[in-house]
Length: 242
Image 1: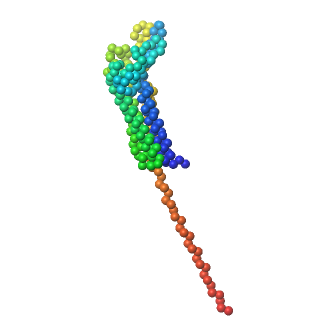
Image 2: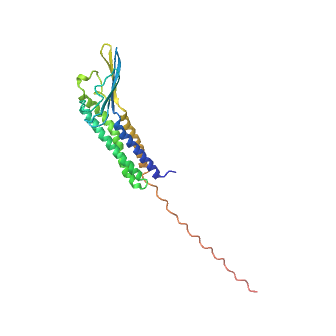
Image 3: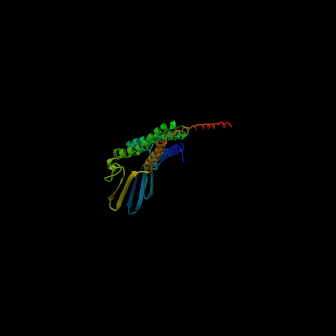
């Protein structure tokens, strides 16, 4: 049967996996905007991916296209794209993810160390709790604040449809700006946004194991076996006189 020490080790490894997934989310798109245009001459798709990072960091916004679609750039920054409010949110999310990873990593190291010393399980739990909170807080804040930021960054003249990223966190819309030309747009969270929730669940599992088996069972008290009582001496009888 596995001991509490082994279970704490498993919990620490799971916390480490959650922290790694959290830092991996930094390098994966958190938001995706896609426009598909259909004309009599053909169709094309343009996709813009946004990443967490500093507002002036080149590559935080990347564009790709297929068919007759076209990109005004291959990669740029929030500042160059005049997305200053959106860039502030990307920067906040970037810092929260980094801090969550560091705290989760420290919690995992302490959790491994708690295998030999149960007293280290408590600080490991504390670090894992904060990392778990940041893992779920970051995407929630991202979802709550991004539409408002984009409504400030996207000029009214560029809003060719009634709804878009400025009105909701995810959705789709279609329009026909000219006869024979249709434009369909979709917007919403990217894989990195979902990965943060995955990290939250994994951190929660590891945290549960660390908390559940944070102490070792008490050592059994040795029971002393009483010494056997000496056998009673057989009574001596005096033989009768003749």
